[in-house]
Structure formats: C-alpha cells, structure tokens
Length: 553
Image (cartoon, rainbow, N blue to C red; front, side, top):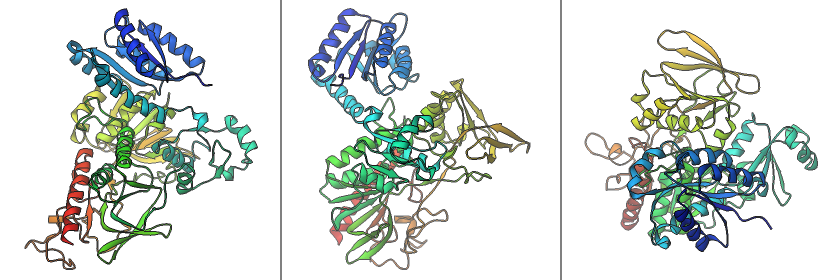
C-alpha cells in the first residue's frame, strides 16, 4: 500500500507547532501523514529523507518568523525538494505587512493569519482547496502517460503542452531512458514518434490532439444537437460566458481547440486580477473556472474546432472540422488571439524546436541551467522572464523599444530590475534564428546603430503581440483593418445606421457582431481592453445580451 502523502508544518514555537499538528491530524490524519519540525533546517532534512524514499509531500506550512531561517527562506529552498507541494506562509496579525512584502520573494499558494479559530471556518476550507488541487495535478508521473519523443520535435512539444494544460499527468522520456520502453512497445522506428503509452497498455503513434483527448476521457463531440448558447473559445471570456450562461439556466456548450484558459492559461503568474492579492497562475485560474463551469452543467468539448457559422431557422448552425454540427439560439465568439509570428529569418523552421510562442509552466523546468531569451516588453513577457529566472542561469529580455516601461506594468518592471538573473536589452530585435535540427544561435540587431551580433541560444520565447484568428468566419462578419470583429456601436456609420445587410429594425446590441445573435467577448473583439478581468466581464455581459436577444426573438 503506498505511503500517505505528508503534510509538513514548521514552527519554532513548540506550543504552536503542536497545536498546528493537532488541528491537521484532527481533519486530515486519516488521509495524510502529519510531520512537524521546529526549525527550517530540520524541516529541510525531513524533506530530503522523504524525497530519498520517494514519498510525496502535499503541503508545506511555515511560520513567517523563525530564528536562523525565515519561513520564506525555508519555502524557497523547499521548492527544489518538493516542487509540487502547496506552500503556505503562517503569520500573525501584526506581521501581515511584513509577510506580504516577503511574498514577492517566493511563489506562495496562500498565506494564513494566526490564530485561525475556529479551524473549521478559517483553516480547513483553505487547505481543502489547496489539497484538492494538489491531488489533481501532482500524481506521480509513472501513474500517468509516458510520452516518447525528441525534445526538439515540434510535435512532441505540442503534445507536452496539450497534456500539461489539460492537467493530464505524464512523463517525457527520450534517448537511453526510453530505449527499453521503445523496444517493448515496437517503437524502434523514429517515424513512429512521438508516441504516447497509457498505463493500461494502449499506444498512440503520432496521435492527433483529438485522439489524445478521446483517450484521456475528454469530450470531443457534442452530446446534443441543440443548445441555447454555444460559446466558441475557452479563455477567460469564454469561461466567463459559459459560467454565467449555465448558472442562469441556459443549456450551454463550450468549444475549445486545445485547452481552457487561452493565453491567460499559459501565464506563470497573474498578479493584478481582482480577488487574488498573492497572484494566481494562469493554469490554476483556468482550472478553477473550468471546475466552476462543469459544476453549473456546462458541456465542454476539447480538441474540437468550429469552422463555420451559418443561419439555421431562428438560430445558428455551427459546423465542426470533423463534419459534425450543432445548432443554437445564440453564439458567443470568444476565440481570443494568437501570438504574432516572429518576422525573423529561420524562425518558422525552428518553431517548436527552440523557438516557442508564449510559455507554460512545464517549459520552465526544462530550462534549468540554460540561458533563455524572451522577446517582447508587455506584461506577458515580463511575467515569463520572472518565472524563467527561477530555473534558468540567465534570462535576456529583448525589447525593440527604448524602455520596457512603455508597455509593461510598473510592478513587473521593478521586480525585473531587481532580479540579478534578468538582463534587459533595449532597441534590440531578432534578425535571424539559426541552427540545424534546433535553435543554436540568434542574430541580434541594434536599431540605433544597425550593428548585428551573433549570440549562442537554445531557447527563445516570443511575446510580440497577437492577431485575431477570424479568417474562418465568412464575409458577413465585419472586421476592422487588423481582423478584429466589430460589434455594437463600431458597426454603425456616422449617421448611426447599422450595416447595409443588417436584417433587423433595431441596432446591434453592444457586443453583438454584424450577424444577429452572435456576440463577441474578449480579445477577439475590436477595441476591447486586453486584460483578463475585462475579458471575464465581457463574457458575463454577453450572456446578459443573449437573454435580451432571446426575449426579443
């Protein structure tokens, strides 16, 4: 029988330490092993022993003030020994400000104020949520899927991202580590890779994302031919729309091409989203929203792609890439945006083989000890640079402007400037990327002098703006000059008249596009505010307008 996961609590005050352990045993003793230590150094020794025995640590609770090693210092060092454990800082009321300042130095999952009386209200609900998340995402790799494939394969990277973003446990093996498994699974020919091996023995050779989704139990086809509302896109706007629609009694289908969360789901840390004073990772925010949607009865499709929207009676028909279709009274388009491609020679050939767009958590661990380059100067680039700096030996931010403050929030700028592992190079652009089977060099150009420089590089992460994926929509969907969908007032001419082909006597609702009954929310909408909070708000607002549309029709 496998050992129970460990809950480790650290407090130099013996009375407090015993009290914390007592509360933990009372609520979690039947499922977890409670271990207490009275100093950070003792706790690290315990963690090393647990790691050597292969025992899992689920939760780390550390007092903020300890002699010799503070709680923050302990949590920083413990991250290497128990990288998947949930980290909680314990602080007294008087120490709250000091604790919050210290939080900037370590990625915490939560902090708790002492005393937490009664624990049934102030302690257990917080820890329950953290432990549920840990149980969902931190299972041992060998209990999940084995991915075989070369690290410089774009297909391998696509599978890694799909599995990671959909919270599917996996391990990636290559080279000598994979030799025995490849032989046993009849995968000796490189043409069969990448491949996925499932615990029950199923082998998928060079699978499509839809095949993977079906194998891991994600729905890829609709369960009904008709819905009140279909939401296309599972980013913050789409999730917001789906949650509000389902919670208000509308039969709702959410369709997502890869994984819920959109670009926000790839963010290592979102620190300016309302209600999360310590910040929240994009993947966690997306998973919370997904869980909420499912709880309200939203039907979710993954690895499904809508390729056409057409009239069907009083509603709309949505055609999928696999030939199937569904109909709905109303549609919410929340397809977000796609990263703009790097206009550098060789970038297209090395995409997925050292050149990446956006960044997800699993990629950071692969960069341990390496020098990483980040292209861009907006908040997404800043968040990525700070996250990579926890693993890489150095992070170089390449900014074509004269100052990252022109496009990045000040709280991120301050942290980047204070991090000795991050270098910012302004007035610098990537002219070319070079390498044989993967990225090996960058050619950088100085826009002030015109001089070029060749630097060694193995990983380049690109954050240079985004473009809307609206090419699949027909001519009836009016866009601006950049391809973003026009809605509401943006559809009216100077005299306040709707488009010539607008079939109704009323003007389009605020988020309604040029096709009645189709609403647009989030980044894909022209003139939208490109922020997570505004995207969620637009998703909720779109549902209000859907109700208005349904009542009028």
